[in-house]
Image 1 (tube, rainbow, N blue to C red):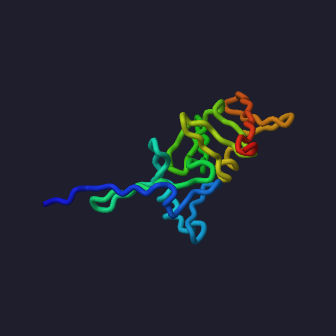
Image 2 (image 1 turned 180 degrees about the vertical axis):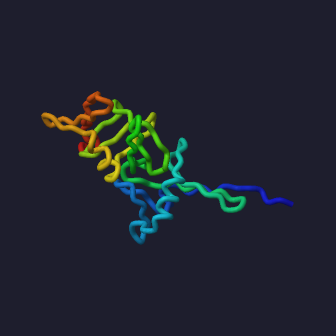
Image 3 (image 1 turned 30 degrees about the vertical axis):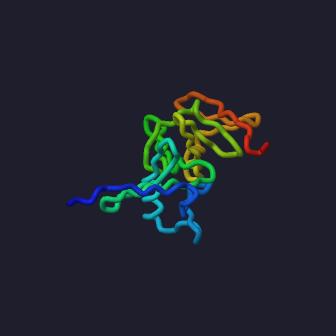
Length: 160
């Protein structure tokens, strides 16, 4: 007789870990420190209609944990400059920079990626900085000899 596979789903409010506004994992004892665990958590991020979650299989049991995050769940951790500018996300996924999809909010740089929003973590921002220009309190990015203005979006949470 074979055991039937089953899934355990842990809702966001029951998760024992979370992602902070800078893309760092935490639990009740503080910020995660072990690089392999941090990389594993980032690489396991997935999304469905209920939100972002981590998933793992343990034998015939699949555990799915929805986790809270302070700002975004996806971050630019690295930038590769070759023919195109490629953003390397915390999940290890690589996406092409879309200058027209960039925006600034609360002095942070973001990019729309379909329905998702990616935030530039400090290390990603430092890498992309060489393409940024400021003029008359406006920020621009120069890619392939073209200059794109990066719009600033008012903080919608500040008014609530």
